[in-house]
Amino acid sequence: MPRIATTCLAALLSLALAQPTAAQWIDSRASDDYGLPSLTSSGSQAVSGEEARLGRAWLRQFRARAPGWDDPIAQEYVESLITRLLPHSDLVDTDTLVTLVESRMLNAFAVPGGVIGVNAGLFAFADEEAALVSVLAHELGHLSQRHYARSLARAEQTQIPTMAAMLAGMLIAAGGGGDAGIGVAMGSQAAFIQDQLAYSRRFEQEADRIGLQAMAQAGYDPQAMVRMFRAMQRMASLQGGNPPEFLLTHPVTESRLSDTQDRASQLRLDSPRDEDLQYSLVRARALLAIHRRDPRQAATRLAQGDAPEAARRYLAALIDAERGNTDAALRDLDALAREFPDLALLPASATEVAFEAGRYDDTIERSRRQLRLMPGHVPTTRLLGEALLQRDPDEAWRVLRELSERRPEDPQVFTLLAEAAGRSDREAWGHLARAEQMQLTGRIDNAIRQLDVAKGVAEREGNTTAASRIEQRRKDFLGYRETMEKF
Image (cartoon, rainbow, N blue to C red; front, side):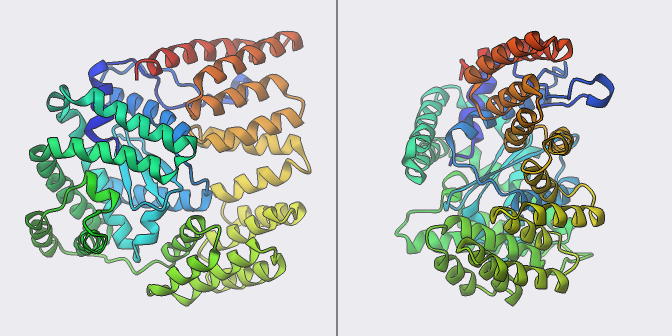
């Protein structure tokens, strides 16, 4: 999976395309249009605004080509880490978007405009939270220093063939090549980085500096960055010089490591954070996602590290659930939730197990109980909406519509919203929600056709509010397609 870096984004920036911004919801209660998202520009011509539009345009294409890791619990966890680091990363007024990738490759990436991508494989490799944080902090450093835009002039002569190779690799992955296709894209990116070596070394050191500062100020041991890079180098050595994908786009030299070590040793931790059990639990989920066909491998890998006993119990419960032992899984997860009442992911995981087993009434009861204690918890809210689809579609529509207002860039939420609309006799809104899901996943032509269907339904129903909204979205989508055609 490529980190977009100077390659694709440099090409996009040179095209100077007008790209819609991230989706923004309007108040559906005030306008009664059920608030489907907008990709229209905010009108700002600032470079940061342009980068945000381009980054989100790239993300839509990436979603169409890469295997997404749809895990709301892991998603919320990574978003919480980004939120913790942002105030210390020299990023001002940046709205971040996190996308998770179901790939065992060790990699993460950052795209201008605040898009952060994390592979499940990064969790598998990092056996401590601070190690994962070091990679995220480094990527935020790249964003804060605007390395992509700064390398534009250097990239002009090589950007087009490199971008084509990267997109070809992504298409192979999307067509079933999996990690092999992603590897093709990474190889082209590595060649490009080699051509830009003088630039990348300086940029990597700048990102290290920002990342180390952010880590220390957020309470994480900055030495974890040094440990992480050295561990990657050892892996590359053991693999016969075939480095982890992260190192292909982030070349590490001994001088850089020495510099990082020196800087890290000079930083003080005023309020160090304790090791968080939550990380080990999310890591267990990542390992299970990677080893879905053989869960025993996930348990073995978790046990190889110094994972807390609670994390091993958690993974065992998830494996029980995968094997259909629902009662045992729920019993163990409920016991863990009582032991660690401050960890919302434990009752959320039990609710998830109940839902996957088809126990919709139990799911609804568990969700509502947790939401009374933790209003707005996103993974639990989504589970509530999914379960209500089987019991009360009108209520499911209300829950999922409100969730989509909070998560306007989440394709899975719109998939559920479209289903809720259809089941609650909101046909026009259902087609519109489906169109939004399509455009969020890069299928803009299909999305436009879906809008045409939505318009016909709205006119037949006499729903002028929906018809007006659909017409506006069609204009937005046509502009979006024009931009996409120039990639």
